[in-house]
Length: 82
Image (tube, rainbow, N blue to C red; front, side):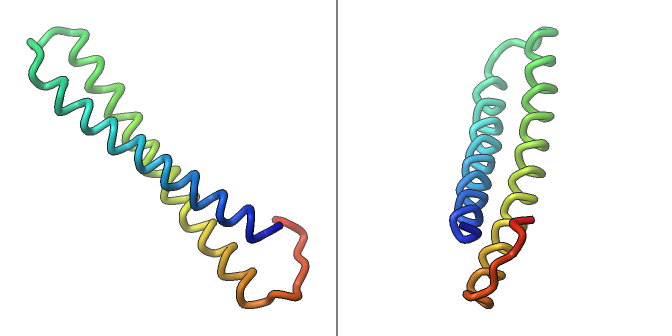
């Protein structure tokens, strides 16, 4: 079960990184529009989304790798799931 959760965390991390990349790509496409307050608001929102996605993706990646390494080093050990 821990190995499944570790792989699930790694998958979620990859999805979060893809969301961050899509946000940056959207910001590049948005740069071709005329500068209005709504475009500036979109830039701010995309920046926040990108930063949060990268931060959560990094946390999930590190926790997933740690959990995966813990399951491969001690295969007979049954943990509490925390």
